[in-house]
Image 1 (tube, helix red, strand yellow):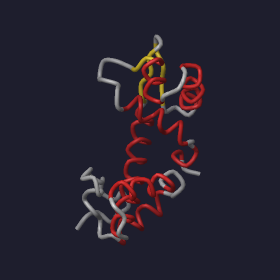
Image 2 (image 1 turned 90 degrees about the vertical axis):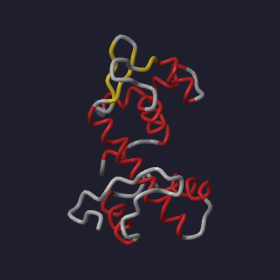
Image 3 (image 1 turned 135 degrees about the vertical axis):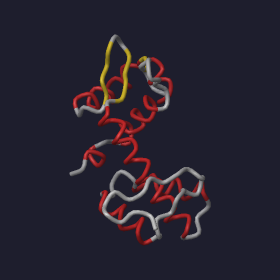
Image 4 (image 1 turned 120 degrees about the vertical axis):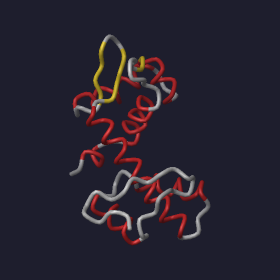
Length: 143
């Protein structure tokens, strides 16, 4: 199983909360992570601790930061989500609907499947919201 497929939705939301708030010189305090997730600090800690065990997050002096592996996992997730969004958009769903539909499957699909879907869509450059989609990693880059 791929690391991304091992995460729960809440753990992924926790990664996103950290990734969107950390800076080069500062981690994110638990209280801010909890606020972003709309939950108590103890509940947020319950999602943070497994991420630390997986090597995706490190904590130092009460602040959390993504590790290199955590950043890579978050980028992989974004690619999964955006490729799935684009597929649903091309099937006629509005951007908000394609985002909701992509969220239903983006953690479950494998990297291999994402690459196949991306190739079948002729390597889209952006999702329906305009966010960039990283190029394929497996030999078949963008044309």
